[in-house]
Length: 83
Image: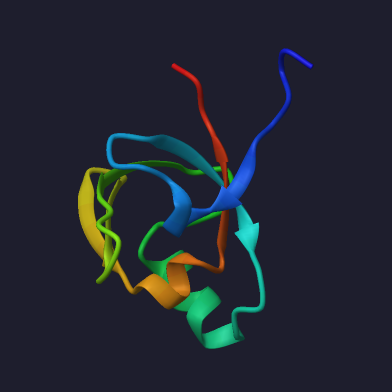
């Protein structure tokens, strides 16, 4: 299982991690639309800038830094990229 895909919630990825967005879990249409408007789309690569054990998760996507509330970050499903 060398190429096994590891899927976790965005909120579980450590600072400095690089992930690919897979989808959303139990997020309403409004939040899904808002995340997509910010560039958090399935297939998009995201870098984790800051992820403390509390507060929002700071990510970098498409050249912009964004803050995602921890509750929403728990619902963004990502695949860890090994590089």
